[in-house]
Image 1 (cartoon, rainbow, N blue to C red):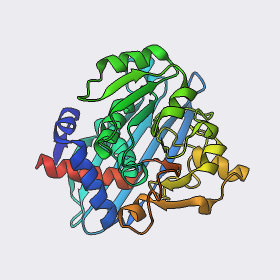
Image 2 (cartoon, rainbow, N blue to C red):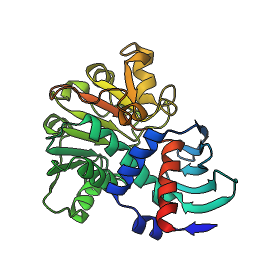
Image 3 (spheres, rainbow, N blue to C red):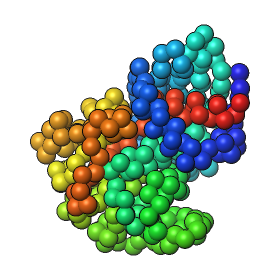
Length: 313
């Protein structure tokens, strides 16, 4: 078995190659993917989560990711999300690689969002707003810049301003202006691509703020209690998801507006499989508002793990 640690994951991967691998993986398809989520209240009342995500491309490869999410970990100097991934040979069932899933997860998640933006964001989009300043933020910024090279301006907003300011100081992207946003509404109204990676349980993004032509990328919520955008954002947007497996009935950004009657399940127009295969149209006009719900998922981890294992040799 090949053991691939965090340093190797970061050295092996780049966003152009990962986006290409995910696009090819969605065109080829995944035969089975499942989702098991266990939950336990933490000492401060915030839920701790244990996710078990298997996926199988029959005859090719299968794998499973084991993930923990402990919101109080940063106070202990530990990552909120930690994971391991085991990849198996699809022909004989032999375990072929054990991969540091903590390092792999932000790469996979950011590439998922960026691939969605490649189909749904305006080709001339120039301004990216990053909402959230955690581990995902620098990955999402770099991935979106890969998918949309026209993005030359990045605004970073976070509830804790000092955390956002520290990230602004550390980000150095050639030819890209990076600034700190003090007012979320102002930043939303001026952005053409908005990526949210927070642990919010009450909507941060108000649909009334979205301007024509905006693409909204929702990343942070993975339970029915978590939510980053309000009903009006869903009502105004053409909605796509990375997969129906891991979004419909699973994440608050969709379950809440469906429950309120703001949208119906059929208002989810397509998933990333359909976009990559040309079975559903992406952006249809410069003026429409698009929304992409990134819930991650076992199929994406399998595609990413296969690329990592191939690059590691």
